[in-house]
Every structure is written in structure tokens, then in C-alpha cells.
Length: 119
Image (cartoon, rainbow, N blue to C red; front, side):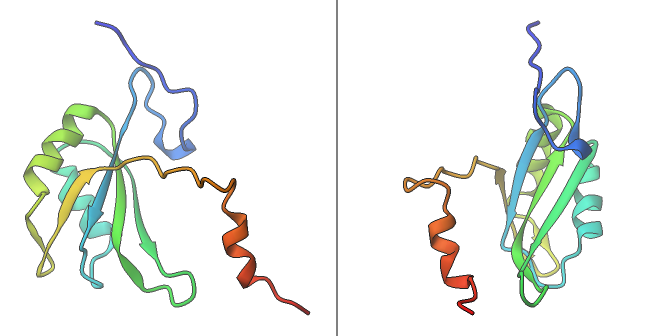
């Protein structure tokens, strides 16, 4: 069996010997917590990290999250079982996370200039 190794991963998500799986969870209710997500995914294997994305200004969850699992097999089992299931009254979509596309204009900082203070 050919093994794959990660050279850069987040410090909390290091799994030596194989590449961990990042999962995108969408259509979450505002009441959903990171602990709820962790409990749901731990039924299928080791959960390395759970990141519930929140609004920068208000701190209210934006309705999606990322879950990193220890192995591809565990992640595929979780995706298959939880996609279309109900969590806190919402039918959630669970998919393999895709890498964020690179901005064709460069780093993307140009889009954030409107937030800079002018004085």
C-alpha cells in the first residue's frame, strides 16, 4: 500500500501517515454548536477539529462549518450517513470540502480595501 504524507497541516490536525479529510457542513441552524457537530461526527471516527464559522461583527453562526476527521474512510462514512440528515430541525448538507479557489486578481486584498479607515 502506498502511503501519503502531509507536509503542511494545521497544528491541531496532524495525522502522521495519511492525509486527513476536511468536511464541509452546510445549512446549519443558528442554534447548532461545535459540541453538537463533534458528537454527530464522532459516531463515525476520530474528529480532529470542528470550526463553526461565525459572522465577524456579530459572532452569530453563519450556517456552515468545517470538520476535520482522522482518515478518509471515517470521513466518507460520516458524509454518507449525515448528508441529508436533520440537525436541530434543519436538513444539513455534508460534503467533502473543496479548496478555496485562488483569486484571479492576486491575494484578494484589493476586495478588502473598503474596510480600511480613511482617517
